[in-house]
Amino acid sequence: MATAILRLVWKVDFPIKEDYFLTFDDGPSDLTKDLIKVLRDNEKNAIFFLLGQKLGSYDLSMYEGYQIACHGYRHVNFALMDPYRTYLEFNKAIKAFEKAGIKPKYFRAPYGLYNLTLLYLIKKSNMKPFQWDYLLGDWNLEEDNILYKKIKEKANNKHVLVLHDGTEGSAAMKAKEKMLEELTRFLNDERKSKENNY
Image (tube, rainbow, N blue to C red; front, side, top):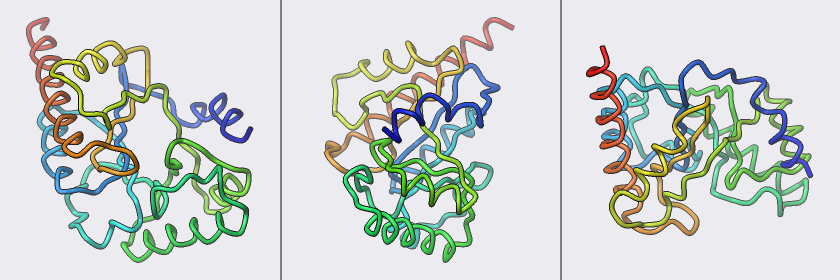
């Protein structure tokens, strides 16, 4: 119920200026630095939703110029948690981000699933829940051009898209590398198309 209501109202707090907006979950990872370079080369904004347990393993300066948001501490399903376990898990995330010197503005729960306790804790921590318009299934390792076509189809109408630069949950090994390959090609083609129209 909490998630269903949230999906109807969350976007009011995040007006989209671009044709579409990219978000990335489950990082950081060994791929993130290359991903950010691709985004910078194409002058593309994005928000990165990071897992607290990973923050101490990477140089977070690579995110300079991009917004970091909270994806929890571990990749867990909050909808299946009771209030006490929700509090413990949320608190671990907050402490990990504080230790890293990061005060996130947004929180996206793994799987996009919330409970009422989590929504209360997010608000109490002066964050806002952040959902999406389209999950693109990039945790699956698909044939060439499949993800490219999905991105091209949905990258419009102020849509917020979710991609993954980390391998969590049921994600296939090498899926994130395939995501970067397909996204890079899409952004390069998009940039060239705009340049040709000027």
